[in-house]
Length: 343
Image 1 (spheres, helix red, strand yellow):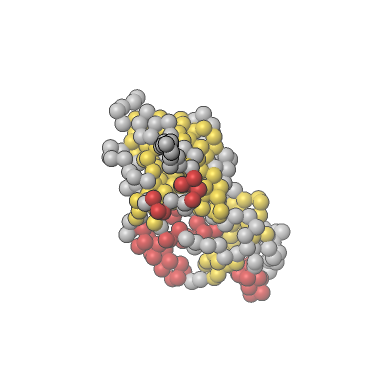
Image 2 (cartoon, rainbow, N blue to C red):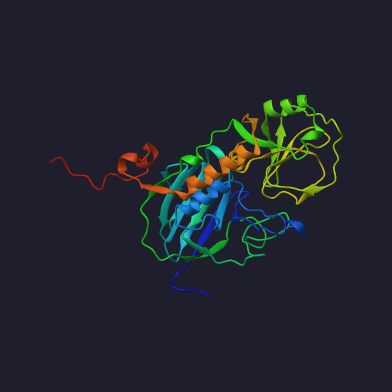
C-alpha cells in the first residue's frame, strides 16, 4: 500500500555487511535469540538524532564494503555518521565523518571505505516500511532473522520508506565530537571469570598490544597478540554472553563477542568491554594496535552517563558554506557557465 508520503531507496550496489539495524531485539536472550543491533550504537544514534529520529530507529549499517543507492518517488532526507568513510552525492565528494543531505529522486549517494573506521550508518527522515520480527528490524543474518528476509542488503533491493513531512534540509555537516574516538585504548571491566587467570596473565592481557584479526565480523573480533595461559583450565559451565565479553578459549587467543554474538558460551571471560568503548573497538580496523585499560564498574557507569549526557544535548548540524567545501568537492563542480569572446 502506498501513499503520498511513500518513497524508496533503490540499492545500486552493496558490499558485504550492509544490513538494516535498529537498537536491537531485546528481551529474548533466554530463548537463544541474540539482540543483534548496531556494531557502533553511538554512531547509529548520532545519525538518527541528526534527523530528529529516536536514537534507536532503523538505519542502514554499512561496512567497509560500502553501498551505492538512489532515491525514488520523493526526496529522502538522509544522515550518514560513523567512521571516516568517503561519501559522495552524484559523484561530488562530501565531508567524511558525518553529513546530512536531501536525496532528490534519481540522485545517487555513494559511501565507500575512507581513511579510518569500519562502520557507518545511513539514517532516513522517516520510517522503513518493512515487517518486524519480534518487534525489531535488526538483521541477524546467521539465523535469517529481521531486515530484508533475514539477509544482508544487496543490489536490486528497494527499501520502502514513509517519509516525514518537512522541508528539505540543506547540505550540512554533523558536529558530533563524541565520535572522535581514535584507536589506542579500549576500557574494560575485569570478569566475570578473571579468577581463571593469574596476575601475570591479567597484566599481559592489559598491556597487549593487540590487533583485530582478519577473522572479524559482526559476531566476534578475534584478537592477535600475546597468548594467554589459564590458571584453572578453560572450560566453564556455559552462561550468558553480553556484547563486549572477552572469552579466552584453550588456544589462549582472546575473542571479543560483538553484536551478533551467541547467547551463551563456555569459555572463561577475562573481561568485558565497557559500553561507551564498544564503538571504538568496532571501528578499529585490522592491523591497528591497541591495548586494554582496566577500569572499575563505577568508572564504567560514569562513562556511560557522560555519553548519555552528550547525546541528550542533541546533535548539531552546521550548514556547509562554500568556503568549507573540500578542494575535491569544488573540483567536482562546474563553476563556469559560459565563455565570452575577447572581441
